[in-house]
Amino acid sequence: MNDDQSPAWLPLGEAARRLGISVDAVRARVRRGLVESRRGNDGKVSVLITTAQATTEQALVDDEVPSRLRLDLDEARAEVDHWRARAHEAELAAARAEEQARAAQAVAVAEVAAVRAEVAVKDAVIGELRRELEWRRRSWWRKLIG
Image (tube, rainbow, N blue to C red; front, top):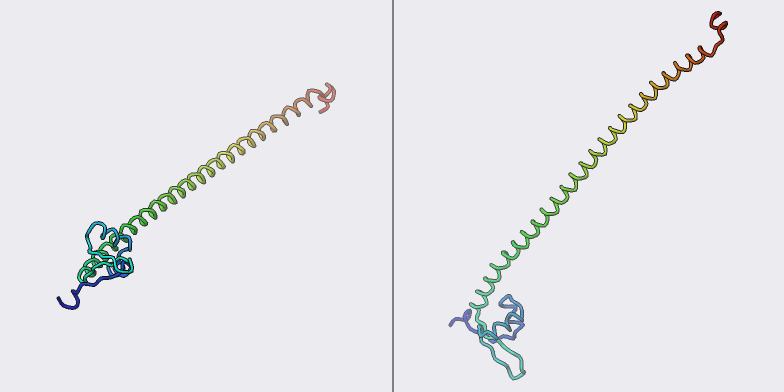
């Protein structure tokens, strides 16, 4: 074996760093028998790691990270799209409410104009009736004289 492929007994923390995974993941691999381990005189666990294994493991992690980031990015984009759709719906609702308010205002203005016209007509009729009543209440001689 050349120097690059030589195995090394590393503490859990160092093995995890070289493999690009967590210490708990290294412990799980030891439990499953995927990596060789031994307990030293100090009672600490050491793991046998080759440089090739560390490189392969790091490549797997590197391949996994972009896919996880893509998933996170896709989720973020989906959430942004969701909130944009909600904002668009809110804008449409506000526009509809504003349009309804304008329509209600126009109806109210038209109703006010109609009432004013009706009042003007009634005022004209009342004026005519008052003049007629005043004429009828005059005595006969005043009507004759004019």
